[in-house]
Length: 149
Image (tube, rainbow, N blue to C red):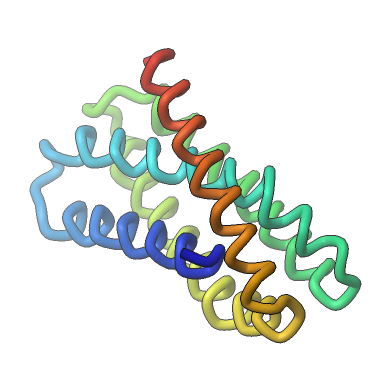
């Protein structure tokens, strides 16, 4: 699986969780948030450790990567704040809603702008190799996070 396919699969998985949040009662949102957080933590990790550094090597991708990094920073801030709230906090639902909106915007930019540019700059073999590295790193990250949970 190439890097872009892997990232799109992650996007789809998180979107399915977002749709569940939108379709369920607030009482189920904390459990869904924990799954969302685990997915986003792993996703942002592999993007920042492997995907974005490779893209930053190319001048025409630098600005969009820097914007992506800032969006990740904002998402991590919301994830941290949400993780520290109790489910009955009046801030939980509004923060969760803003997190979902921010991530949906980020995904739209990546899939609509960044990925098409990446496909023009990198050949299929490079994207395949990046995907392999990212899949391996994601497995390691998720295992270590489960051990720390």
